Figure (cartoon, rainbow, N blue to C red):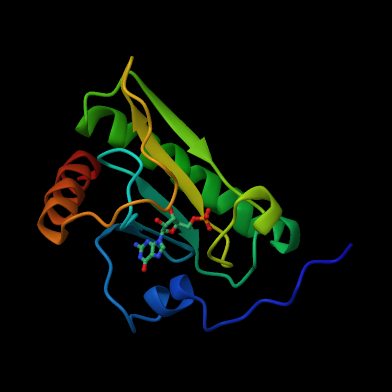
Length: 142
Ligand code: 5GP
C-alpha cells in the first residue's frame, strides 16, 4: 500500500520555515535538530531533514544518510549533556506505527538506568526548561 502524499502544512514544515518557534540545537544545509515540546525524558531531541518527506518510506536515501549522521552527533551530545547511561533512537512510520507528525523525524532520547520514559506525545514541557536543556546540548556541540 502506498503512503499518503506529503502535506507541507505539517507542524515540522512550519518549524523548518520559521513560521512557528522551536528550541533549535543544531542546523546544517540538510538537517535541523530541535527540542521535542512533549519530551519523553529531559533532553529529548528531534532530528529533522529539511527535504520534504512524510517518513522513511518516501524519503530520499541521500537525506536519510545525512540525517543519520546528525542523529549520531546529537546522540553523543545528549549522552554527555545529561550524563545519560544510554540513548534511545526511534522513528515511526504512519499512524499504525505511532507517527503523529507527517514530516520525517528521528527521536533522540537520553536514558538513565531504572528511569522509565514518559508517554509519547504526553505533557507539554515548560518553555524555560526546554530552553535550558537546549543550551546544555548546544554547549556540548560547540
Ligand atoms: P511522532 O509521533 O510523529 O513520531 O512524533 C512527533 C513528536 O513531535 C512527538 O514526540 C511530539 O511531542 C512532538 N511535537 C508535536 N508538536 C510539536 C511542536 O509543535 N513542536 C515540537 N518541537 N515538537 C512537537
